[in-house]
Length: 185
Image (cartoon, rainbow, N blue to C red; front, side, top):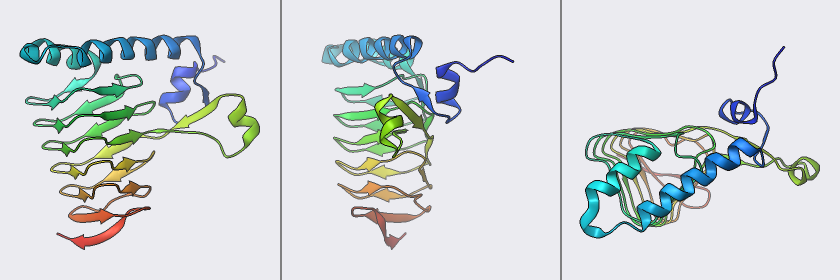
């Protein structure tokens, strides 16, 4: 019986040690690529796009304004005509999938990672991660935070400053801390 690597555990949503050597190397690679992207000259957008496509799967017309930060990159997939404004952070220990025509305002945090409530496990460096899925035609407002395990339905709008800790139905606007439906579209 072979045991799972920490990376396999992470991707499968099991408890894993983020201090694992392979995961550390993977994060270092992503941080180097983010640093290159963030330092790219404005007139070198084609080269910047190549860096993004090295980090993750990006559909036609996808663009991110620097600075951008992620943990691994290989767990991120963005659809066509994806746009993210300055300061997007994606902690992608699990899959983060965006549909087509998604717009993200400045300063948004999307995190698949979480820590155990049990302080003994937490102090040992154990983490878990749960996928996040964002549908088509979604607009995520400035400073919003999307927590682990969330699904956001098509055409949804996440208001500025919202903290999304439960699934968002399609065709709704959510706002607040924690975010709740304030309008049906």
